[in-house]
Image (tube, rainbow, N blue to C red; front, side, top):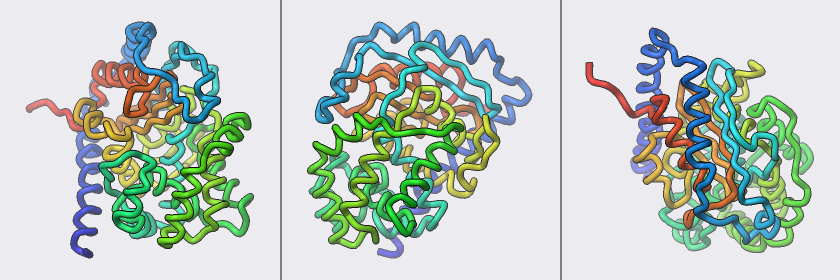
Length: 346
């Protein structure tokens, strides 16, 4: 088992390293021929115009308030590692971050407790099952999963250090705000709607606690996790958060180091292998971009060393990922050479 875990750890690191090495090579070329502001503007605008009329998918409705969000909202933001922002569409409306938050609480746990605390508690493997699967928990007693599915994410929230729920929450909202470059808050309407309907997550939290996958109180952990999912963001916020990961954990707008650079490859590796629910493999195959989606309609994507992209479009596909968001990100990345695995023969 030790050899197996070590192999998985090296595989995850290897995936991220391959992308980072490729992006480093691409960045060297980009320094000789930097992407122009007009190219960024055109990529964002063209993607917005191309997909703004796409009517596929439907809003999430298992959280009642999400079904009420206007389905025609569509915002696209791109932030470079140099701190330049390019946007189109509905950039001002705020929406609940939902599962995208899992990325940044994972970052917090890595910062506080290191890689072993993540790998030895919930693991870094794709489960091959739905994001809120109880079967996946029972199969390996809460291990052999990852921090981007609900059981692993609740365990990560329950692993954040603090002497009180308020102290833990201050750390969670703090790291999200550091990544976004502004003070974020909670959409209380969404928080209440989720709290009233999160019975399955409460069961998952109790089960993960029974298997000793996190040290905190399971009731507190699931409440803090629910609040974290209700953090209100914009597409521009997600773009900046993605750019912070693309920039070695340093926010390119504020200059604040939100995450130690040594932890960025691990975060990106888990995003690459488990970021878009059951379609994570398809997404990586077609784009090469580490990304994370949320049922609120948001997606954050990262082109290491280059830029972050954030999108907001509520209608989701069968896997739970924003339809217009996926299309827009793929088109922008293709136009700008964002795939970190792509290279040209010399």
